[in-house]
Length: 443
Image 1: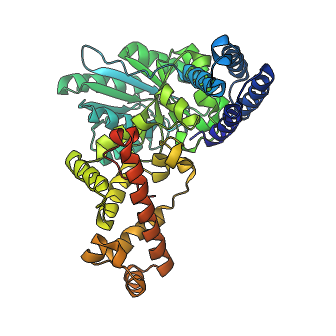
Image 2 (image 1 turned 135 degrees about the vertical axis):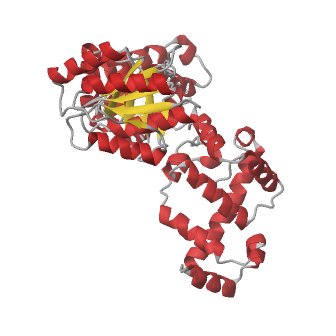
Image 3 (image 1 turned 90 degrees about the horizontal axis):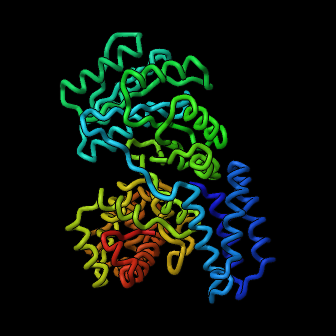
């Protein structure tokens, strides 16, 4: 996520932090590099110009230049300005005092609108809300069938009616939501390959009939400034209340994320970070700024852990780590829990790249290797899992044969396990360990 931009900005700021004393020449050189990095990331030119001017002005301020750590102060300035650019603070959804809350999802065809409708419904269900979904896309073949399939997969109801009139469909769905007791109605509207007046007129009429509490634009982050332009057009024509950026996990540049708030005045409320229905996150500008600058996103990491990790087993695991009695069986259990949190590469990027964790976000993780790790541990005896030091050469050959792996893979696993034990002791010994006590990471 925004890997290319992140790497460039971190390199520029690392050079600044290496200077014992900063001069205007240092700042100007850094600002040129930051400007180039942002433009290459497809950030709106006007947004780049204003961002660099604000950062330069603050970086040359007396408070920064007179500081004992001016390089660190500049990093703070860049982080604060990135946060402001992304939206200052996360914006939550607006819910109606009188149910049902109506959420209209709009956007161009191919932006991931229908899938995002399902993801948002699942997110709301986890908040203990009762969502009902409906598709009013009567133009795209099988569009309503697609939403119905998604509804069955996530076990959330979809209102279906045999009609080709989008206005009648949405009104009937609203009546159904009121009568049955659903507190949220999510309306998946029709998209087009480009902005056209017919699309906008239909959305305006749906808005007049439903009086939505939220009008969320679903935009493909990987289209960069095209996503920003569509956000501007939709906002000017129908008035959006927020943006959901999809495919953020594949966006290495970040032009859309860094431009939309400044160009439209509307906040990014959610980001899609994968294909799974659980892969929708509330957008937190300060956390995203931290990720971009290599500071990690520990709060989001903890929230993911709280959703998937059993509290009692986490407490027992922390005690084992602290007592240095963390076994290979525990290692396997932790691996399974972490895989439930999502792709491991995404999880590792949430760690700050400092101290013993430096460079952790750049690690490449092959999911097949994780499956092999489980197979190797399953091929061990209970005593071998408990006392890994007894695994000699002949035992390693037997374990390799039983797991369908090579002896080299068994050796690599044992090295990883040993490194994990050492790293977890370091993590649980400091402040980070107090916050991440429920997590143990096998890398």
